[in-house]
Image (tube, rainbow, N blue to C red):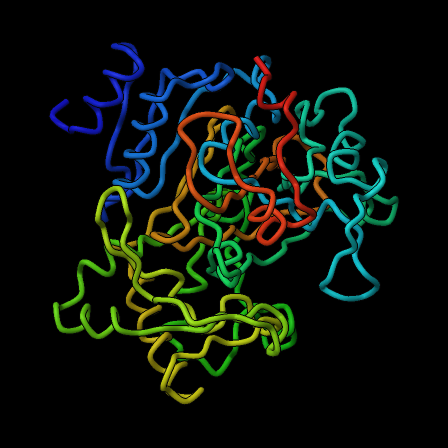
Length: 402
């Protein structure tokens, strides 16, 4: 009750709003209930949410009514946090490459259609899930006969990362709307999936370079097993460093590449300061966020070997248990995280599922640019053309959705 963020939330949303914070030992995480995001937000309310995320890095707005709350409402809400960036999964891939044509997939090939075909009588994506800005994050899809006969399989997680940190203007906030979360607990040990450990015969399925420090590899692979998203609090990790180390890291500039060493990536600071809270954090302190395909990061003035040594030392610090938070998802939750103040990783996943008890269905939107207290956003056409794929903006009918 003494938390100023809690008082600000009650003033903006009324006495029925409730908040719990922090959720993690590091000081990160706030869970807020009593806010209906199907309704447009007032300026004072948006300001309160901006301040809550700036302070706590990860924020859940719990209990949205999925019978009334759509993916269109979700996209409208996302516009307050930045311009939504269309996701490549919704577009045609240019041959066998990592590049995409500026053409939407036909409706029958979109992720939402495959979800709707998997359990046609009991599960359908929410209205608005076909938006170019909505990434359908799921293990639910219609199966071929041979896949159904083979049964469920375990797929390793992603690597620790932020979302699209290599752009000239990096993504600022990502968010999930949770539709389904797995409830099955049939793996050894009573978890949803067993712990995944790469074996000697399948190193190609691992997502990290094997020549990394063994203890760092152990920290990277210590993943949640019940469908949670794991976060590491890079603000708390920075605050825990000695003052001299903070000063040294604050002087470092890094160049982040995507999949092309010849891209025009500029140097940017490793340490960022949140403009609302003043909290300093390490922005994606990862030498190679998505190995082996992504180009490693370069530190200004350092060799490739020295860059790797420093950044893997920082990563090992950030992934310590005291900065780690495994977020359990509940249907109806909207969870946002600040991409400058956290890194995250998805869990190992059960695929080829044949039961809704194994279903994990989220909708994700990622945003870049300045926040907006009021909608529609006022980004210039020039800015949109330079920084947003396909010059996408959320349609007016979505902004006006009630």
